[in-house]
Amino acid sequence: MITLSLLDLFRKRKMKLNKHYASILSLLIIGIVLGLHGNADAQMFSVKSEPRTYRPPTIGGYIGIEPAHFKYKPSSDALNNNIGYSFNDPLYRIRLELQNIDIYFGAGWNLGPQNLLNYYEIGAQLQNVYALFRSRHFVFGVPVRIETNYTQVQSQKSQIGSDTFQQSSGTVGSGPAVMLRAKSDIRLTSILTVNYGFSVRSLGTSSGSLYALINQNRLYFDHVFNQVGLSLGYDYEFSRYDLTGVRYDYAMKGSTIVIGITF
Image (cartoon, rainbow, N blue to C red):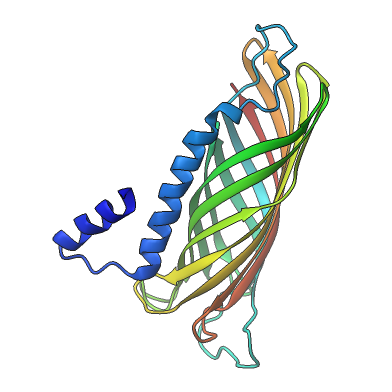
């Protein structure tokens, strides 16, 4: 009902909403409902037998660097004779991780063989982990992750919006999640999801599917300075675009080292 109401509102304003964008909107609404429904499980990594004074942090802010590999990988033998977006250079990351929602931003400049490419990415993911097995020092669960993302790779020689790789995507995925708890204030989490969804080129008609493999790992040192803790992380992500035609078929692989503080 919520999704239909929103779509009706768009129709009344005479906006031509692409069916893929409508699907992205539906995924986000489902994710919000899922996140609210699963809020009670957000503290699955806390131990109920511990004194009530112990509260795991629920907010984390991170910065990181990612050696990234962005490569043209068409689904056929067709060649890309236009501007190429491939690069093998570091990107810079900022992440805000809340109880059920992560927001992230990535950027890189002067990329590629000729130092002419700029990379920008912004996205958000809704995630909840459902515990299947729980003990004092170990938890095994199943995550459900819904993610939306906008990625742009632009040549400094091209005009804004002209012949630019720019994709808006929405994916959903799941996999295993584990947590180890050495002490009340030292935790290690690892979450792996296989995501699949769709991608739409902004300002264009090209659309298709997006496959992503995402692994997030965090080592927490809680309450280092009163309620403030420290966290180290390693993220791995592989994503592949399979779009209409082969002009914008690319694959990206990257490993990110992050450091942050928690509250």
